[in-house]
Image (cartoon, rainbow, N blue to C red; front, side, top):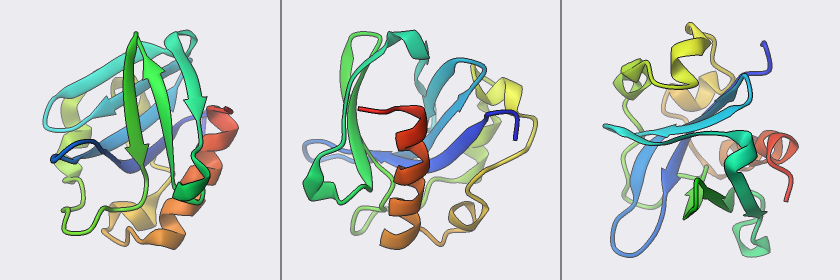
Length: 128
């Protein structure tokens, strides 16, 4: 897998949740939605925490100085991220060449179990 990890994820906060994909490869961390949200070296990712009340399915992190809340469990009423978001070609996504870690979730099977499983894999990449 070349150390690459890609997961459907949602940025959460306020009245708006944003579907997209969180990815890491070659020392970088990227979140894309309809547009790139952030694309930073892992060295610029700080203050990673895994709130217990998210039961392993989400985290908080600071990327390039901005605080983000990321969940791998689809929020109620939210659509799954559209696979076309993966075609942005920015940062990590430009390096991945079509190999995806979370194939079940990419097929729209995002549920609590798959979200927690994704969180477990990300905890190995982004310990907190």
